[in-house]
Amino acid sequence: MSVVFALVGGVASGKSTVARAFEKLGATVIDADAEGHEVLKDAQVRHEIRQAFGDVFAADGSVDRAKLGAAVFGDAAKLERLNGITHPRIRARTQAKLDAAIRGDAKAVVLDISLLLESKAYEGKYDVLLYVACPEDERERRAEAKRGWPRGEVQKRQQHQLSLDTKRALADAVIDNGGSEEATQHQVQRLWNEYVG
Figure 1 (cartoon, rainbow, N blue to C red):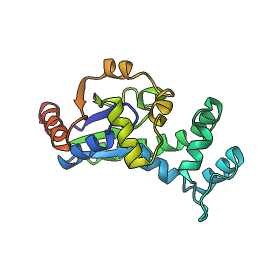
Figure 2 (cartoon, rainbow, N blue to C red):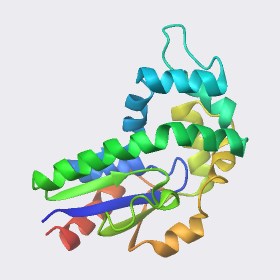
Figure 3 (cartoon, rainbow, N blue to C red):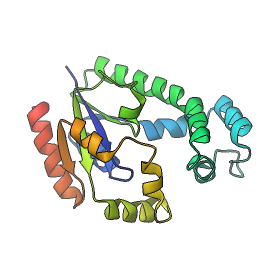
């Protein structure tokens, strides 16, 4: 019987780092962001995005995620329109991977899905909800260094999600990801021992 963990936390809190720590222990990771990249390669999706948002494409014809992000974040109606195009397809892909992992008898599965609680589509699909905690200044620093985001972008995107207090209150356990990867790995190991054995 697979144990399904779901990760929630703030924007740039390091959910992917936590997912990789679980992966090292043998978990199957389902990353909605990676599925989102795949969805954006679909010709029909690109067509719908062009119709909705105009030229948000790179020279090679792929969706330029930075341009697309700039076009939709800060405009609730546009963001909702984009989500309407991409989210059903991302959910279908993540659900198929979750079903396959459970059928394949994975010891543990980790759902790394940004809007997991907001979408309601994943209710009842996981056993353990983990909140990944990280101070805001550290999240801003990471987003700047790793994603090239300007200062304040984390806060801007966070406004489109449930509050961090709500996410934390709903979680079964908290992982402090404000320190070293080694410290995070130790916490993940403890949770693995507790829930997976």
